[in-house]
Image (cartoon, rainbow, N blue to C red):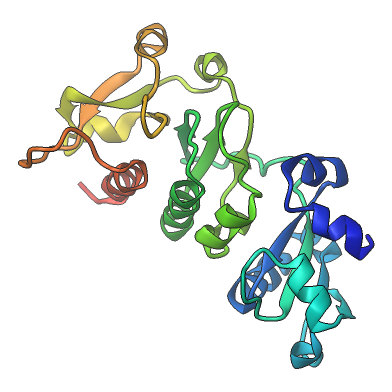
Length: 242
């Protein structure tokens, strides 16, 4: 891939067309290299570095470029001088026994999605499902916010709400009037639904899906939690030994 095409990877349509996305910065490259040791498809990644990183130890094919060229390719304002062009996964990893799914309906904020992926990677045992209309998980802002978690969480995009009952026997969602998520019943579901930051999951869809409602108990006066915070609390609860 030439430098002009790499620059185009900042746009979703070209990421989809070329089948690659950008990973930038030392920490993310290190996480990519660790992931590549377990995921052979990632070995096809290519590294682009300035002279400051020309001796970087990497299993990837490496290209040395000028600082000016790096500034044109990088998404950050002051690039570190190291980035990789990474192939998109052709298919998500197969589910494993005991795995639970986190379904995100039309999540829009890159920071929220990156933080959620980071949480799921920390706990392990979770799959992330994104509805149509969600932010692209390969958006550079999501990739940075995930801090490398993107390489470690099974991820599916364009998953329709209506497809969930055929895959999961038991669905759950958050509701202000639901049962406390501290209950043992909260742990018994296969897939947990979370909605758009402003609109949530459509009520009629939840009714059709027969998603069991649960509530995060609080004593404050505000009406809702940040999406990433809500997912963080729920996944922590799901990993807690009862």
